[in-house]
Length: 357
Image 1: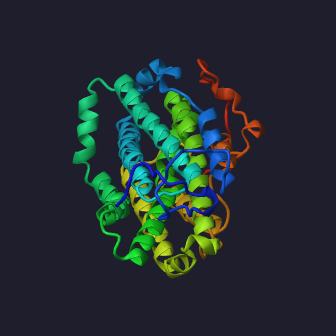
Image 2: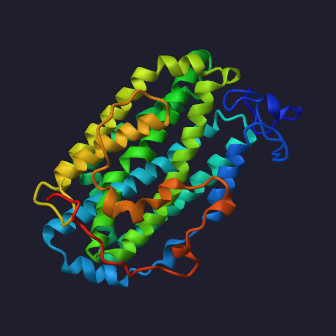
Image 3: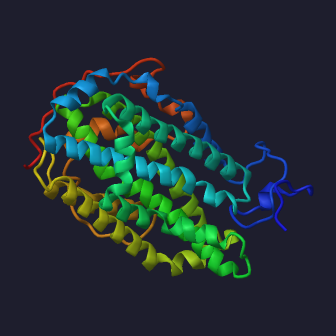
């Protein structure tokens, strides 16, 4: 029978990441996988609040947008809100099975930051729109968003359904592995079309406060992506974890998951731009970006990949995407643009010459 506190002393150095003995005393002096303590510390150093960003200008910007621009911006904001609602509840589905203290702490902090992200979207919606309820209600009414919600939640729901049935450990291990993979794909792929659109608006001096918030969210998600990468690497390589064969067996399914996510994101880009493009972005460019992104993400976690060329929007997005190279050691990385109480809302003119419209 599972217990919330194991009264027997368990050697933390013998505990696997998942499905070991129940945890007792939380101790962080003896670490089997120090990487997770480093990642947890880095995440806590990145603490921020959406209220630090001024959105008064954004409200005026939105009123001056064309109908097409309003559609693209609002659709992405609703999509982002749905995705962070999923991941905020999705990460804890793994905690039921975690038996490593430093990973447990890392996931708890991760969930906390996903809550900040969800609060941030509410903050944006409340400050930009006259009726926030209309926007939130529109999430459920948008069939394209709900299609993607069904794809995003599938593995979490499957894992929750297996929580009380541990009679088939191989099936449970496979579902844990595929759920980590699903989280990786959500963090690595599903947000990025919407992120790029947010940054494109800011490049055109529109909705810059929103983009500043999205950049903070993007910085956190880059760290969360590293979390999943490290979990997958350990499960794939460490024989003592008992997942190496399962990882090999699941490789084809994992590739298919990436392909499905890529297809969904391309369809989302087509949906966004059905009535026209915005300066710096169009449907074709975003499709190319999704292909490049998915292959680079697959390579990152040891899955088969194809060479599809270079990032088609690397030039103007570099400043926004610089948090992709988040350092694990806290002292090695500082984002000076986001000190408490400060907001950098003035962007330099950027060259859109590398973009094809």
